[in-house]
Amino acid sequence: MGRPYAKGYRCEREAKAFLEKQGFFVVRSAGSHSPADLVAIRYREVWLVQVKAKTLPSKAEREKLLNIATMYGATAVAMFKQNRRWCVKIISGDNKGDSKDGSS
Image 1 (cartoon, one colour):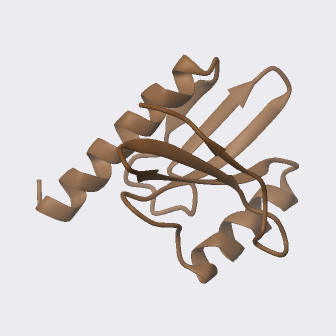
Image 2 (cartoon, rainbow, N blue to C red):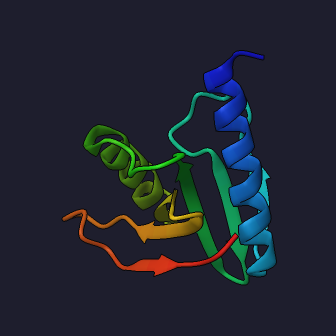
């Protein structure tokens, strides 16, 4: 397993565990090369999640994720770590969505 892949895999597993602690059922889309690394479901809420180690996904990645989420009635979400805490950003059309912080 190469270093970038291993780091991404570890971040995705940590994000998955974080969301599960928040009450989500989470599926990791390993190796799919889709815009969503995780699909998280809680009650009637569905999140398509892009996980990054330290920063938001690129604008192009956010737009692709938002387009797919909109198509299927889901919420596009970016997760990344800042000061050892998970930052959860809801991606909206203007890319100024709500932010929620959590701890891992």
